[in-house]
Length: 394
View (cartoon, rainbow, N blue to C red):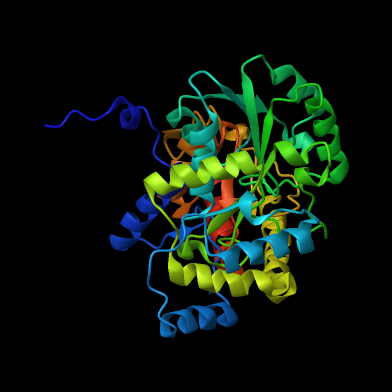
């Protein structure tokens, strides 16, 4: 029997993917499972993007792509950054990857040495912590509160910084909390970071367009932060293109070159057909996908209203993405249908077994008091799922 590496043995399995797999197993056994665990829009990729992919097939795009992306795609990304975020990048500062997850893995691989610390405001996206650990970095979790909409305060940031701090990673809109940082909130964090010029900021903006407050703000917009911020984005969420696997970064040229070098030895360039389709996706105005955002906003109101009717669920109003992150610690220590609930994992598994609803434990996101519920599902499914949850915990 082969001896597996310590690296893989010490790595956690992605909790979102694990819960989705478990839900699929139960569905295969004939159980009527409603999946509210995956971070995946339930819309089809818009036709104008699909047509661009078909055109690329017919135009015989089938060869290896440049490691850091087609020039035309890099130009579309540059135009998008300028149009949507007022950020000025050059081609040499852009790297296209096989999804934003690979972009993050590249960043960790080229910047982290053993023992370097990365500040992660909790809750954070499930893979942040393990990507950091995989590259011998040390995740420093900073707990935020539902009362503060799960946002990091300048005081908390200052308290978490040590001589070993190399980076801070955060997402806005946030997966799993849906929190959106305002310009003033980002500026306040930037003011703290001015005292520590060597700390790099990784701003994960994959949910940028799924925003219910009208405006997205980027850390890189500040002149004194531009040269030390890596902006990570992609097309999975806003364009309903999760399986197309295209992400990208805009950042300091030295870091972009290093990511290009790393990717060249790992996967090389991203899929040729997907890249051609993304050129069209990014060149078209974001208003073309606004219909999805409008529907998510309706669902947000629906699910919050239903959850607030269940004793023990404590919610806030997320300003973006398509998740709610209720505090369910009310149930800890209680026994439901003969099952003792000790933590969020127990509660999430209880809901899967007794309500046939798949959610994700908050422990995976660095917050042990909460569960993540995705409302990337039809209104009918949301109504039925929350009805089942209410019955299961009453």
